[in-house]
Amino acid sequence: MSGKKIYKVVVVGAGKRGKHHAAAFKKNPRFELAGLCDVVPAQLEKAAAELGVSRTSADPLALSKEIQPDIFCFCTPPQIRLSLIRVGIQSGASLIAYEKPMALSMNEAIEIQKAVQAAGVKTVVSHQHRYGVHYQKVKEIISSGAIGRVHTVYGTAVGWMLHMITHLVDYMLWYNDYAPAEWVMGQAAGRGKLRDNHPSPDYVAGFIQFANGVRGIVECGAGAPDVPEVDYWWRKNRIGAQGTEGFAEVLTGGGWRAVTRDQKGVISGEGCMNYELDMGPYVDEMVRWLDDDSQVHPCSGERSFQGFEITMGILRSVVERGQIQLPLGPGEPELDALKRILPETPVLLSSEANRNEYKD
Ligand SMILES: NC(=O)c1ccc[n+]([C@@H]2O[C@H](COP(=O)([O-])OP(=O)(O)OC[C@H]3O[C@@H](n4cnc5c(N)ncnc54)[C@H](O)[C@@H]3O)[C@@H](O)[C@H]2O)c1
Image (cartoon, rainbow, N blue to C red; front, side, top):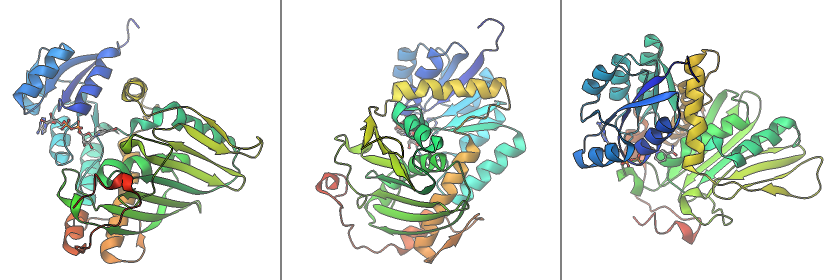
């Protein structure tokens, strides 16, 4: 490892995901976890002690001006994105790593991409489930041609939209080789989770027309189908692809399975979403991209933007009705528009497993 640059990192947000990120940076010898920031002093002190970080602050800009990090990482609630992107740019960092969802509206996502591209800063958004062995296996099967020509990619999650949908769309895009989307159409129901800190309709569903002719189908929330093979509620997610000769799919908390052209019956294997296992390769690919501009991170901001635009297009379809052509320009913030038009009618559940989370 000697002679290779050590990248200095500041992590902002010392909650659940901030600690996951900080621990992964600390574990990798190519990073120096140089500073930690949070606006809640008790949270900050506890995390800094656990991680052995001495430079801490409640002010991200002051801390990063002092440290001059190579990586500015933030893992804050979804309400804080563009402002911290601006701090990251001001810090002089070469790469900003941040949590999904990348924004709360198309306008914000457009502003983020404009700002980082103008500044020449690389960005990475944390859709790290893809590092699970079961996610990788499904990709391998699809890419090998074993399910024939892919005609449909799909993703479902019972968790609500701003927690789950960008994960689903990101992996659907991956399984469809990041073909661009031409248009989307969607529907939504239930106002309960509009008040959440991940504001969302209780249920949203969308169709995606990809330029390569593949159909995308995504469903998120109370009405999305149960995944009875998985017990842990947040991991009741199913993402996969159907082809002319079979299918392959991953269950976030329940391994993978496939029917292929060449093997008899259903084939399957293990795997379960695991933060600790997924974060290692996720941060390691940041090193590769910083070392070599051609080694673009698979979770680049550009890819995240592609998925976010699809999601916001689906919301615009709910509001405007009909098909929505991509790419999207600026417009009425999609969640504000949903608040304006979604009826009070309570959402209908797909299964009793969802009742606990969708009470109002
Ligand atoms: N990629 C994944 O698998 C995954 C999983 C869970 C959550 N997330 C996402 O991660 C983000 C954070 O979620 P979490 O579960 O870590 O939340 P959390 O509440 O545990 O942590 C957020 C932290 O940010 C701090 N904070 C808030 N405003 C701040 C500011 N202006 N400056 C500095 N610190 C500030 C809070 O005090 C808190 O400690 C969310 O966007 C969420 O959607 C991603």
